[in-house]
Figure (tube, rainbow, N blue to C red):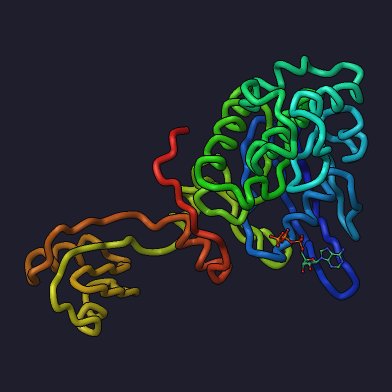
Length: 304
Ligand SMILES: Nc1ncnc2c1ncn2[C@@H]1O[C@H](COP(=O)(O)OP(=O)(O)OP(=O)(O)O)[C@@H](O)[C@H]1O
């Protein structure tokens, strides 16, 4: 059974085709990023999966059920960007308040621990940072012990440290087998935390794969070298070169024949410090969507 099945789903708002024929299945236990520029249709799709709106056409099923039924059975929880918190309650009271709504709620302390909130459980919401408030929403989402958690741009506005703390909590929890689907603008977030990235643009899925597979979709490899006084036109004529960037003595080339290019640079020119790398998810994203994504902040080398 899939966690989510979308079949030929469309959602129109008058003339606007917010979702324009999406076919997508997400299996249980997957951690999936839905990446796309503003207005791509991410929130509209998530709303349909949560049963908050219905498709104009097509079918949405969550664990083979109507989305609303899946939500009512506690199979699905959402972490949305705003709302849902009362500023005078403490973190613990907020989670307890949610637990009171579910007949077989998970122990509140367990949810607080999973969201990394034990140390600040008695802090009032109004005194919590944005990241702490988001982790409180995450703890509340964990209360029914759902099979699937959906997060809509959950870290918008958080600084790098808060973002990392948030994703570490989500990731540790997902390792227990929970399915996680999150919408994001942040490429590094998709690349670091998702097993699979679904790129949407103008209401359609334009790419779907692991971050490495998506990087490999964009032709060529990147060759970087130090080469003083480089002439961009001369570089453009070298083997397989399709892109050239010269910054001072630092040269970055994209080539469809990186071996031949590397050989040429090292034997026929003064190039040194040569590096050859595959293309990144960012390169594919730029090629597919025109680059309208946030590439900062970039907390590189995050532990997983
Ligand atoms: N209720 C609505 N009425 C009219 N148009 C809408 C409505 N909701 C969304 N849209 C339009 O549908 C398109 C998709 O919006 P959506 O919010 O799903 O995109 P998104 O990918 O989540 O964008 P963002 O990253 O900016 O949150 C946009 O053009 C938006 O203006």
